[in-house]
Image 1 (cartoon, rainbow, N blue to C red):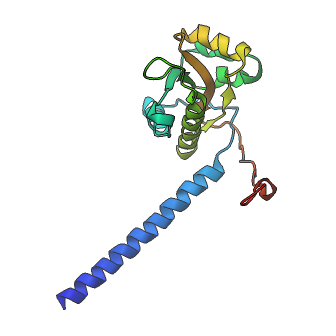
Image 2: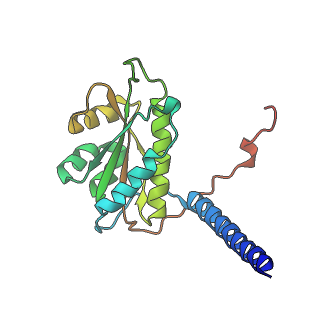
Length: 194
């Protein structure tokens, strides 16, 4: 009898765990498919705890040779946000916080790190997914490789020579009702050969 009870308890536990895993997997997929670019924000503060959670997610990204070249500058001061809000990315000035994703362009032995942009892209995507999961909004605004976008950030943030700004992500609570774009295009998929 005890063996039967133990087997039933195990079966129930495995069913619950399996259901949880399926629900958890669906939540991850829903978050990815819900991500959207948000360019207008309310005045509600983004807390330091939220920023830390976002940065932890960003740093969980994969990186070539595990160099983890990403560096982040969290900007809350209005004067600095104003310096970063040039041309196409004026929304930075209106966001409660902006995170500048930067990359260390040298490797462990001082040579050039050719993977830093790919690594920063992966970190940025994780960052954006964390923002979505927290009910916040953000948009990826490019810096690299455009000198007219990088130079103001380098100057405003006083970045070292071997650190380049990759992108700036303004973050806040969405002021509008932004929707994700349907980017599914089966015609862009090839199997086995082009």
